[in-house]
Length: 414
Image (cartoon, rainbow, N blue to C red):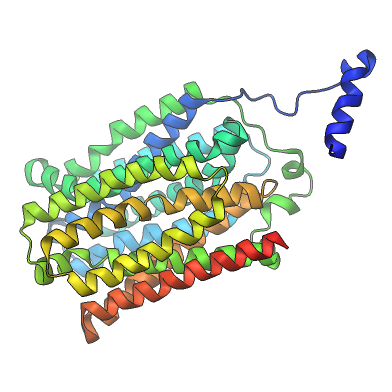
């Protein structure tokens, strides 16, 4: 019996002491309504982030800029997401997390409105910068808030719900933006997400209980606000390195799927859309399946996912000209790739339970940096030496992520 269990038994046996026991947390055991409202907000955030992908041409034409400059609307949101994720924990450590999360949701509404009615390129970029702040802040705090809204054994399920919203939005944002843009214009497409953001905000405010900052947050702030200090812990540094390689490899390949499918597999636009939809559906299934395994098999999952993704990348190189083989491989990619953040979010909740906010900020910054590095390096290789070198590069990175996850597991077992 552990010392904690002995202490509990002693208190329970003494009626006088038993009356002095104070509950550890005023929050309910499971606030699933709040989790669902967060998942909806995540879906709107991701849809808003990637909406410009299919709307660059009309945006550039109307605002009088090149498509390259219009594309910076995506980059600027990523930059502000990184900056926010690194510092939000320290800046908000004295505030109720319910209020902080609602503020980021409100910022999403304001961003969508500004972009919709932007009279110039500068105003558009301001709106996109606000979106980046909302993305970085919301994602940074999501894991720590889920940890406090549901019991410990339900955290993987809560994170899976958030990533299901992520998977759905990432799948439909570009084609939906293109469809809406053709009927109601690019401004109408951006404004279409504003009502959903308002619904998420109201639902979140009504369903989420007060989430006061922990005592360590309101005193020195050292434990929960010093993001970079966490990297001094070997298990954190190794884990973040594995996350970096995972997302670099994932987006080095995923970013260039469309030109690969069009030129190598030679699929039509309708088939391309169907494949992306199947990947998204597989991702939703994957988040559910993986969340059921994380309770007892966390590190095996973290090791296996990138390893299998590396095998899929090599499979695409070997049989990319076959539409059938490619379809099965991409469904597997969607199944694994969307589930990966659930695994690493669970790792964060167990490795840094007292530093989940700072750890979440560090994780979001690492992921955003990885996406930028993976996509840009993959693009250079794609143009310089061909698509297969980009996919090979992705496979090497993913294998490296698997290896580092194994090192993290071994270091934890010592």
